[in-house]
Image (cartoon, rainbow over all chains, first blue to last red):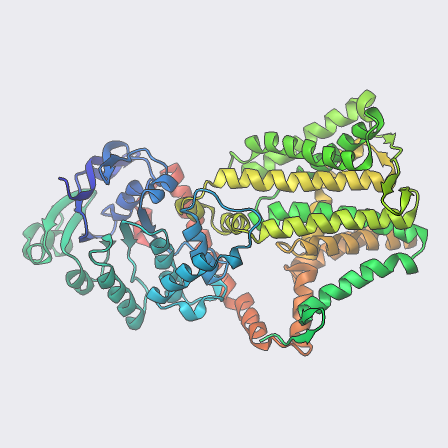
Amino acid sequence: MSDAILRTENLTRRFGELVAVDAVDLEVHDGEIRGLIGPNGAGKTTVFNLLSGMLDPSSGRIWFDGEDITHTPPHEITSRGMALAFQITSIFPELTVVENVLGSINGQKRLLSPIARYSDDREGIDRATGILGRVGLERYADETAENLSHGDQKLLELALALASDPDLLLLDEPTAGLSASETRTVVELLEELRGEVTIVLIEHDVDLVMELVDSLTVLHRGRIVAEGTPAEIERNETVQQVYFGREY
Amino acid sequence: MTESHETPVGRVTPKRGAWGLVAAVAVAFPFVAGDFLLFLAASVLALGLYGAAFDLLYGYTGLLSFGHAVFFGVGAYAATFAITDFGRGVFVGLAAGFLATALVAVGLGLVATRVSSHGFVIVTILIALIANLAAVSLTSITGGTDGRSVAVPPVALPGLGDLSFFDPVFRYFFTLAVVVASLLVMYRLANSPVGLAFRMIRDNERRARMLGYNVTAYKLFAFSASGAFAGLAGVLSTYVTGFVSASEFSLVVSGDAIIYTLVGGRATLFGAVLGAVLVEGASNFVSELTDAYPLVVGALLLLTVVFEPEGLVGVAARMRERFGSPDATSAADDGARADDGARADDGARADDGARAAESESGTDATGDEHR
């Protein structure tokens, strides 16, 4: 258990009658890339919202880095080193691209100056530019974020998550809606991050998941129905049923 | 990409040139204008500061306050008490107005910033209404709507002797100096890391919170700073007119700040000053022609909001683009953004709002996943 960076026990979230996440026991190991898959409505995004503190669980507990973060507010969870890249891009549309990333870096600082110019913060801007380089957005640094294409906004979303210097990165469909070359950029970036950052990935592109992840957790109707390596999951009968077979 | 020229006083760019022109007009104005115009200009400058203070909260932080009249009024009365009841000077009056308003703003902000954005609007309206009622009924203190006259003491400046607020030129320059100094401070704040946090909250509050920002604390800071400068504007206004009344607290005064900012252009600070000049200037001259001047000013506001949402500052930028612009490329980009970029994104933002609502009310979690 010592190398589990993230652990949940009996994690449950109800919305009225609906049990969106049902007694999930999840254990993510330090340094791995974990895929979280399942049909639409399986509760994947809700699990992310619970982990990142955006939703309060109905019951169950969450440990991150050995500490109980079950009812910790989202900004504190971010400060402890967990970052979430949203499925639907959630950027700062009227700021420039580099301001977006600089703002994310600044979010980790305890006190910000009300008189220094943020444009004079060489160190911060260099770091922001470096992160933009990693996602391939360097050339748009001074562009207003809302002018970016959908794919580039998605990459900026990823840059925002990286800028908080996380130990654990939750990525909700990072390649959905991306072109083939943009997808390549993301895959290469994730390969680069392997070992450096622990990643939990929600992704529908099966080929991409099989290529990237070390292990997979399959959710169906809020429950974990299978866990294992990509090869094991491919052979798993329950998973076959969930995806292709009849309801059971 | 912007052309510039080296001169003995430093690098001159078209942008700096424009500021130089504004400064030259502001300094030369008293030497060509008559007493009434100087009086008008000084009042308008004070109102411009009031608008800019509002813009710090609305334009930068995205919080629409209908309560800024309260700050304007508190500032005006704090200075009045300092001068009339405690026999203090002009500078103590300014400090008293600024600090008293900052304190009041912190108190009110603790309540107002706790609620959602719509709640914020409603809370500020309530605050304005209550303050107005109190100010009107406490006639023994405020003088009610009949008001109190304030004998603003002269200012002793080294080498210049005693300068009186009855002197229109001194009154104008004093107001100009305080307004310019305040604008510079607000400009620094708006372009600091804290100012960047304000704009992040305006653009996407939920994400700012996720990134580690204590959104409520930043909102409170923006509210208080904005309130304090609005209070300072109230002090200046009292110095210019030598008069203060409970009408400073009326909701109409709150509306004025909104109008200046919308007409001038939000998130620019200086735009609100331009807005005040245009709106108050127009009111003044049109009111001599017809009693229906509020209709004319109202039409002006409507036209601005419909045809130039970025206000006068937006018009200026457009003019630069059209006539011999050195930034031709960015001009084209801006055009593109107005057409598709902004719209596409509004959709995304609406989605986001819906998601936030879902998360908070917790009615539909799986809705997320169908998108």
